[in-house]
Length: 215
Image 1 (tube, one colour):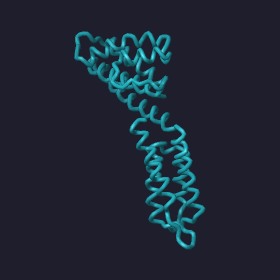
Image 2 (tube, helix red, strand yellow):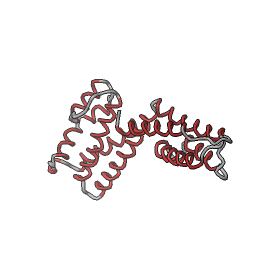
Image 3 (cartoon, helix red, strand yellow):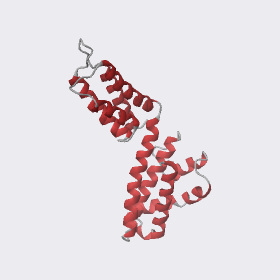
Image 4 (cartoon, one colour):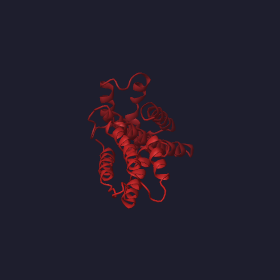
């Protein structure tokens, strides 16, 4: 399990436990200070993990917004707890994996955008380094997501592992064959062996790969 998943799951566990410990006064009203301390952290977590327009975040935010005069009765508190536990259930059920793949796609997309900008400025060696770094990491993350152990593996070895499991095929398989050579030239500073066409092919491939597997 990746560190991001560990951290997020742990934080959900902590806040779920904190939610259960929010004290109620004799009149069945939740202690405002404890509630708002929890709610602020819970909203921040839901916003960061699921996004501003996710149902979990929107519902909890709406419940907190309608509170007036710090009056949080037990039913309202339970509603907020229920929304948060619903989000936690999605995380426990594996939703975070898809989320992390999406995060990865966004990060790699930034690398590709930077590579395209460098290529447009006729800095094809810089563009090649950026694009190859994005592709190599994307291939490893994709392989790991499919249960393959590719730690400390070369790009050649990662590609072979993907091929052996039938995880790449057709035109993608053929295009991948040229990538290790370009990657090695880029990462080992063999600039004279790199062409703008090489760089363009890596950028084109990694863009398509991200769309296929990290969308």
